[in-house]
Amino acid sequence: MVEIAGTDMVKFAKNGSNVTTAAAKVARAFTGRPLICVPRQHPFFSFDDWFIGATAIKRGIPEVHHATTLLFDYGDLASLQALFAQHPGQIAGVMLEPATTVGPCDGAPGYDRLRPPTAVVAQWPGNFLKLVQDLCRREGALFILDEMITGFRWDLHGAQKLFGVQPDLSTFGKGMANGFAVAALVGRREVMEVGAINRPGQERTFLVSTTHGGEMASLAAFRETVAVYEEQDVVGHLWNYGGKLMTGLEEAAREAGVGSAFQLQGNAISMNYLTFDAQGQPSLPLRTLFSQEMIRHGVLMPWIAPSFAHRDGELQRTLEAARKALAVYAQALEAGAERFLEGPAIKPVFRQFN
Image (spheres, rainbow, N blue to C red):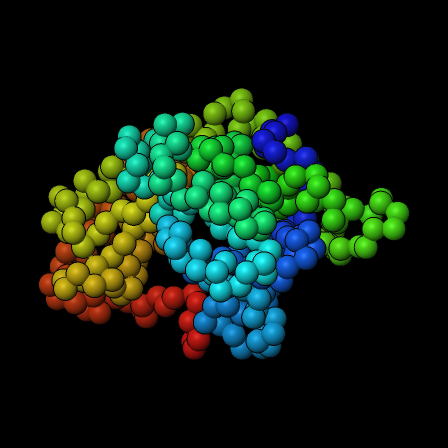
């Protein structure tokens, strides 16, 4: 079974929202403070009101439910420092993903987006995660990493290992049981014990209650998934396959003459394609068109998530579909995407109106 450094206790649940909300509750209970800080660039932490109310979708959520959630900018330590200065002694925790398509060590000497970050990269003085960790330690707030996506993909021990940090609390899910419904909140014993029920006289913290919390199939799937990860080097395959896919897609875009209008952001394990119009502005119609044309040629790719099931055959099929899709994309840059779309363009998830 996998061991996460600095993890003494675990609370299992059925989905990620449950454990991120539990992490916020633990942080408040442990510190006696009300506020939680999250980066505005990270799209999703929980379907619960404390987070969703801090997005554009506020309908049905009283302001009091999200007034304690504060936003800062990932990669900008000054924006987080400003929140601590504005709310002295009131911030319970800072919750963030270790990395998305933007990482904490982008720009570090020796950083290679096709490979896992090395220890030398993690020791870079500009490592944003280390800067946030140090700030939290100084201010008495908990440092919380949401590894729902990065955990069991970037590294079997979490992206926190690659970037050389040790959070007070971490959340995991998604890849940890290969699609089965299980998630986990893990952390230091002294922090996690605020949710204990075996300490007579301690005031209780009601963490998580799930009707199916005792269901064992998902925990068995978790154990077996970890065994497969270890025996077959799943993480190594994901990085390797992702690197080939990223390189191939960029080459296909250059061949189609749209290298500046179709770009790959991020790294091999967590990439995203960006679409720009002829004026260099982000374009959702063009993103929709690319996805449409990929589907036409047998590949469903609204986003990119390499899988252990993806092999050379899937790679070549994807790249061939991309070449054909990007040929249409090139025409749309000149004539307009609307001429080629067979349905409405996609819209951002976090929008106020349909």
